[in-house]
Length: 118
Image (tube, rainbow, N blue to C red):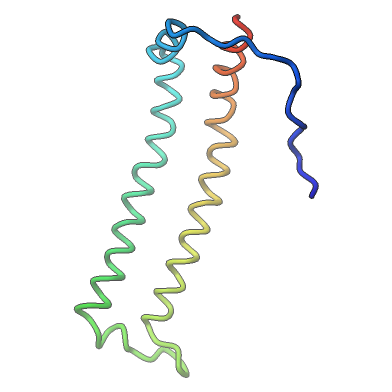
């Protein structure tokens, strides 16, 4: 199986001390990393949960609506159920792009500084 990631380094990295972890945790750079993650993940998670619960509630209380035939044997419940899968994969793809562009560079900078002792 081919991957784009290089093999793990055999070089030993210096382990940061507890004080260094605390210092980084309280730094503005780490705070920005957390804000960037939370501002993306929390609203998207909340939106998806609402979307999922809407589907469940429609299935329970709006049987006539969910049973509406759209074409052939395809009804509204099937279309919305399949949309749940599509939404899940779109969110995962979108998060992977967001993480690669915004989160990973910041996290890698913090990690390399802590391991390198710089």
